[in-house]
Amino acid sequence: MIHLLFIIGIVILLFIAAFLSGSETAITGASKAYLYHLAKKGDERAKKVIALQEDMSLSVETILVLNQLVSFLIPTFSTWYSFKYLSPTMGTICTSVVAIMIIVYAEICPKMIAIRFIIPFALFVSPSISKILQFMRKITLVLEGCAKLSLKLIGIDIDNQKTEDQSDEELRGAIEMHSSEGDEEDEEQKKSMLKNILDLEDVFVNRAMVYRKHLRTIDISLSPSQIAKEISNCPFSRIPLWKDNPENIIGILKVKTFFRALQLANGDTSKIKVSNLISAPWYIPETTSLLDQLQNFRKKREHFALVVDEYGDLLGCITLEDILEEIVGEIVDEYDNNDTEDDIKIQSDGSVIVNGTAPIRDLNRQFNWDIPEKTASTIAGFIMYEIRKIPDIGQIYVLSGLKMEILRRQRNQIVKIKITPQITPNDESILENEN
Image: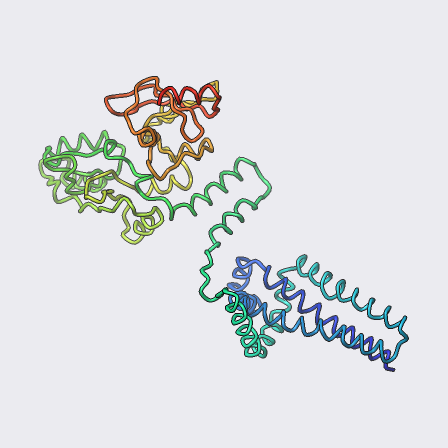
């Protein structure tokens, strides 16, 4: 009879240990995103798993305390039984078998099952673990306090340790790991778009804006008929109007508003007072992140803002389309000048000829280069910052592992650059000679 009771007792303890071991793996490894999806559908067990994950430290500590207690009881019970009812030889065999069973059936098997069926396993154990956590909370907190005190004695203060938020990197890792059936190029484009969304918070508007020299503006002192002619030749839906000098923007004219007024006036431009049609310009600092500006566009229901520096000087403008292009890439419609081929020309030898105004971000994304973006927004600005002088035509510099040759210069502005990604020893000597 005692032998049967021993077997039943060991089986029960092994089952409890297996349950706790698998629960730890399932709760810590279950996908939060999928659990939130189930919780929104009304799955109460998913909500309990989420609650356990939100208090992960206490949940894991409770499971470990109970698991250690059971793991202590099994060999203790086995040793007592072997010494009392078995011969030395049989006792040794018995304790060895029990030890192997603990490893296989209380650790390896439940963890394998939990990993294989992680969501169903987590949902299955969540009600029981939640009740156990409520019952054991005070005991676990006392043990946790003892552990923290012990760590403080050796100079480790858990409460004051600042842990870096890794959620962003986890998302990036998940994006890289994601794969599905379909065209490989489409998959890479999807991944690039998702990563670009994560980058919006770290990119300022001055990296994506249209620069002042490329702004299409109109002098408000022109007659309505002249303004109508200017608008008809302009592909944009919103146009800044200036007074006295081009940097003194006094308002934004919506093309749709102007032509609606023109229609109401039966085509008579003399009846139109342009100053009544404009809206106040919206100025934003150049240090505004793209994510913040996207949210601001939504709140104000606007698509256009002017960018200024710390002194209030006009730098350019940013539109909703500019931000969207940072996510999905260049958007070209029937009104855009499709001069991309003129901006970037890939040569047969692998080199690339680019305009000096080409954004560094676009070049890095298109060619997988690693040109720093902190010091300048355009490739010409980057070269000027690095060499600290105005280069002459034909000069060659090696910057960020790329050979950059000045092809054309207009006054003090770099207009055309030839960039070669492959650097040879001869190129390094060219750089030394130039310096």
